[in-house]
Length: 545
Image 1: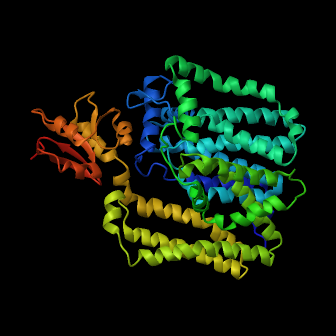
Image 2 (image 1 turned 90 degrees about the horizontal axis):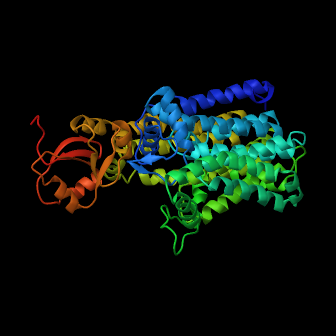
Image 3 (image 1 turned 180 degrees about the vertical axis):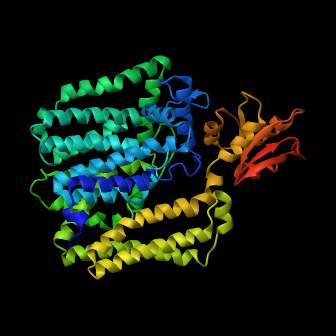
């Protein structure tokens, strides 16, 4: 099977095609929706505060120093705001650029390990994986962190393959690791070190440590990392103790003396997360990992096993942590894309019955639960519940399930009937089709429930200058970004009653769940403005009434 793009095109055309695909998937319509609570609004508000205050050392959220993450991601956001203004597009731009960077790194490493076609396939797989598309379009640390971890491991791999430039690449590995640490903390060094040393031990190549520029590399690492941490400790006494020991090591280990895990999940949590995040390509993942470990290839320097270790070591490490979120596993996506591209490349060269059978079984294993979900969704309609909680229209979700099932079934049939080019095309369009279905069909209904732009701007108009936003219940962090104000949090019904029990007019911004609770408190209140599941509540009727 041959197509001009896969077989005959130049590396420059392949790279240009990948950039164009990323431009559509990561950058197009980047500002079409509001910033969502939680996290997007918080990260944007911190970058906004950093730019306006001129304090580029201490991240600040809601008037208080924010110690949970380093400052690099805030710097990127502040620079983007400086260039493009305080817009949703500017807030999300650093993540989109980092997503593109990951795709380019995967393309470059894939073409050196397995050839030009495999490099293109690796970039295509990563760019069109469902979760990777979504996270490249949101204001979160995970994509930039994944980029720097990938860059560090990319430099290590290039160092193994390029003896003449080995020193340069290994020093680049330390620099990229330092940037990962400045993005999300010690985890950047832990993940890269874990993958590299596990590989060296498992392949009995510890002698390579002598060539890895350890002492110069540590100097490079410290030159990049130390200045900010020193300045941060000087500005905030006790920061390093909290950040390193409480926020990271104790929180990872759990148990007595540790902070309570913020996101406790069972050990097996990441298995369905990985398979779902890599959709639809995850139908190739198990066999790709197995083949990457067992098959020896000329020219790859043993790095197929390195990719497998990258996936497995990171997966086990994240699974062992007491706090888990779906986005934490993102650093394994580039390695998974490379392994699946290698497997698919071999399939194109030699479409054996065993490889075809494995792809069919993988797709069938995904199609079966989707069909079961559709069978449940159609007769059972919890529309009121989901619409009240998040604005999800159940009929839209049913359409999503049907569309997903149709795409998987189409790919399955194409592989079964040996239409390999069409099957790869069907694979490649599934993630983007689902992502844009979510963006244009589901997001407009969800946007008023997840964002607070309209209602916060209304409240900003009502409140006096320099007045904080009174909020009851969970913080609506995007309101801080859109208004440039801090929040005055009110916790508990008694405190809410006390705040509204005043002769002067007072306002409170309340979410749906909290507002339902507030309906039971003593006294009267008036809903001044309502959007989605949020309302502006006052102790006096609207002036227009």
